[in-house]
Length: 505
Ligand code: AHR
Image (cartoon, rainbow, N blue to C red; front, side):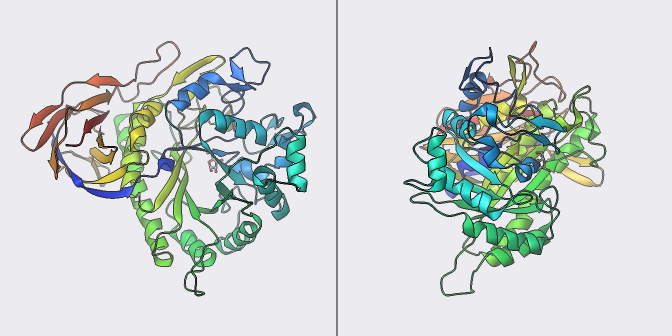
C-alpha cells in the first residue's frame, strides 16, 4: 500500500481562508433557477414566496457565503428592468444562450434578494456589459443600494421594498472575451473602467467591483487588465478601479468536443480528470504572479467565479440545459480544488462553483418535488469549517502515492488544514481509484485532542446518488485514526475524502 506523510505545522498560521472560497453560482440556465430554486407561489412544492424550501434548507447546512446571479453568459443578455414589478406584466425574452427557451422574468431582482436572505448568503450580482448600457448598470446599483429619495429608490419602493439592500459583490460583465461580447482584452479593460466609474457607492454601501477576467491560463488577459485597471504608481495614492479580477476554469477529462459521460467513464478518463483538476494550482499561480507585478500589496482579489466539472448532458435532456450527474469523481475534483484554494488564500478571495442546482457540478439535483444531495454537496458540507479559518502550512511527502497518467505524474494524495476557534480541521483525499493509502499526519508545533473523522467514499468512482438510492455516496463516521509518535495515522480507502477535526492542544 502506498504511504504518504502530511506534515501539518500547527503553529504556523497562514492567510485566512476567505469564506467566499465556498461561494456559489446560479444562472438562468436549464433548471437551475426555474425548477431548482424557484417553483412559484402556486406550486405544491413547499415554498416561501415561490422559492423552494427544501433547496434552501439543504443549502443553509453548507453555510453558503454568497450566490452569483443571473449569469454567466445569460448576464450579458439580461435587462434587470424586465425582472421587477408585477410578475404577470414582466416582459418575456428568449434565452438564446441556453436552450432557446422563453424566459418569463418571474425570478428577478426582488426574488433573488429574497433567496439570498433565506440562504443567509451575500448576493453577487453580475451586471450586463455585453448588451447593456452604463446607465442601465448604474441604475441597477442605485435601485438596490440607495437610501432616501431618487428615481430608482422610488421605483424600488413602488415595487414593495422600502429599505435598500446591502450588496457588496458586483461583476462588470462576464467572459467578455467570449459570450460577453467577444472583446479584446484592451477594449474590455477600458469598458470595465467606464462601467465601474458609474457603479457608485451609495451611502454606507461599498461595492467590491469585479472585472471580467481571463479563461484558463490566459495570463496575457490578466496582465492587460491589471495594467489598465490599476493605478498603482500613477499618482501619489495608489487606487484601484476594481477590487477583484475574475478567472474561469472548468475541469474536463479531454477535449471540449468530447467531454464524455458523467457516470460512464473508464479509469484512464478518471485519472485524466484528476490531472485536469490539479491544473487549477498552476492556473492560480500564473494569474497571481501576474497580479503581484501590479499589486504587490495584494489589494486586488483573484475571483474564480466559475469552476467545476463539465460533462456531456444526461441522455435525453436538452443539450442547452447542461444537466449532468455527479459522482465520487466530482467529489474528488471538489476536494482537490479546495486544498489548492486554501494554499492560494493570500490572493484568492472568492470561488464560485458552477452551478448550485441542476446545472454542471451541482450540489443538488431536483426532479419535480424530489431532491438529491450530490457527492459534491457532501464535500462542501464536510469542509465548511475551513471558512474564515487560518490556513495551516502543510507539506506533503508522497513519493509512493503517485500514478503515471499519459506523460504526466499525478500525486494521488491531497491535503490541507486550517484552525479556527481552537479547532483544527484537516482534509485528506486519496485520488487513487484502486489502491488505499496509508497516511501519517506528522504534527509539528503542537498536538491534537481526540479527533472526530468522517469519510466519503463509494464502491466505485462512478457511484452517485439518485432518488431511489440517495445515500450511495454519503459521509460516514470513521474510527480508523490511530495515534503514533508525533502524530496520527490512518488508511484512506481508494477514491475517498476524509475530514478530521480535533481541538488544538
Ligand atoms: O456555467 C455555464 C457557462 O460557462 C457560463 O454561463 C459561462 O460564463 C461559462 O462559459
